[in-house]
Length: 580
Image 1: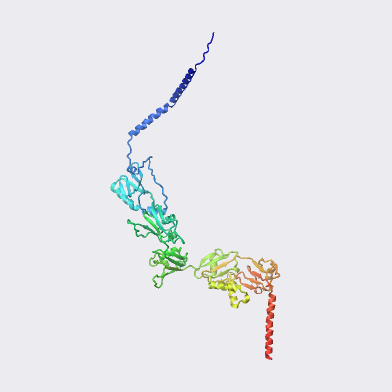
Image 2: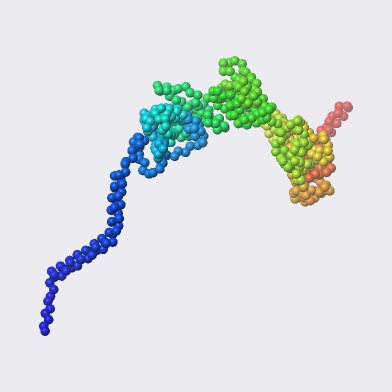
C-alpha cells in the first residue's frame, strides 16, 4: 500500500489559527457573563427603584436663607459654617456681652428658624447697604447700631411679623474694619482690626510710641476720635491712659475700638509731681481731669501708714499770682470723698508725709528684717520681737548705728582729700581732729554695750530706737586677729587666759622691723584703736596690730632733739650776755 504524503497549504494553516482565536474569545465572554450576571441583575432593579423614589418624592422647598446666601444644606442635621474667633473674657464682657459692638456690613449672623420640624440654621451676611435679610421676616436696617440696639430692632421686626414663629438671631462672626493711627507713632497709617482689639494693641501694630530723640509721645492723653457725617471730629471723652492701665488694668483706660474710630497720639504735654511717702516719687504726665488719687496711683500707692499720712499740694499759678498751699486729707481722698480728692492742675506738686518709721535688724537673730517703731520701741523689746539671739550671736561685737547727717558735701570731700594728701606733721590740731573723725570712726555708731544690757541687766543701754536705726548682730568670731610686723600673721583661737604678748607669740613673735612699743588693739565691738598698754582684757573679735619702724625715724628724732637743744643753749647764752 502506498501512503501519499501531502504538504499543508499555508493559507489553510492561517485560517485555522484565526478560528482557534475566535473560539477562545467566545468562551471568555460566556464565562464573564455567567460570573457577573447575578450582580447585574441585582444592581439594575436598585437603580430603577432609586430613580422611581426620586420621581415620587416631592422636592423640599428651598428656604429664603439658602436663596439669600446661595448655600445648600448637604447633610441632615443642624450644621453651620461659623468661623471661630478667639475672644478674651475682657473683650467678650466689654464689647459683646455689654452690647456695645457696632454692627456693620460683612458682620455674619446665625438665624435659627424652628417650625416644629427640622430647624433651619443658616448664616446671614449684613449687606453693603447695612440691611440684614431675615427669612420669613424681611430686611432690617442694623448697620451703625450697637449690638444691643440691633438685637432690639430685629426682635421688634420679628414680633410684628410672626407671633408664633420661633426665630432666634445671634452674631456669629465679626467683620474687619479699618482704623487710622496718627500722631507720635513709628508707622502712622490705616490698620485692619476687629471689634475686640484695644488701643494698646493697635499702637503696637503701628510700631509703638515714639521716644526721644525721634519724638515725645504722650502716654496718658491718647485720643480715640470719631467723625461726623460731615467729616469733622466729634467731641468725645473717649481716650486711652496707658500709664494708669498698666498699673490698674481697668478697661476704661484702654478702650476697645469701634468701627469709625481714629487714634491720635499727641506730643507729651505738661507734668505733675509727687514726693515723700510714696512708692515711686517723681514727675508724671498730666492728663486733664486728674485728681489726687490719680497721682497717688501713678506713684504706685503710699509707702507709709494711711492712718497717719498727710499731704500738702503746692500750686504754682502761671499768671504770676502767689503760690498756693493746700492741705489734703489723704484718708478721705482715697476713700472717694470728692471734696478731699480735688482736681489737679498742670504743674501741681504733691508732697506726702507719713512714711512709716522702721528700724532694721541684721545678723544673728531668729527673725531679722525691718520692724515698725510703735510706742517708743526700745532695743530690748526689739530683740524680743525678733525671737532673740541665735546661739552664734556675738554680743560683744553688736552695734547700733543711727542715721546722722553731718552735712557732708562735695566741698568737705575736697577738704578731706587735701588733708589725706598732707603729712601729719603739717596738720594743725583742728585738721587732725577732723581727719580722725572722718576716717577712724563709724558715723552714727551709738555707745551701746549689748553684753551689759542682756547679760548684766544694765538698762541704761536699753536705748529708745528711732526711724532708720540699724542694729547689727554679727556672728561670734572665736578668734583674735594678729597682723602687722609679726612673723606669721593669723587669726589665733581665742583663749581667755592669753595676754597680748601671748597672741603675738602664737603669731610667730615680732619681726625685725616691728615697733614693739607701738602695739595697737582694735576693739571688735567699736572699732576704736587703743594702745596695748591701756588694754586689760582681749575679747573675741579684737585685732592686734604691730606697726613697723619708720626708716630713719631715730636719726630724725636725734636731729630734731639736737636742734632744739642748740636753740635753748643759744638762748641761754644771749640772756647771760645781756645781763653783763
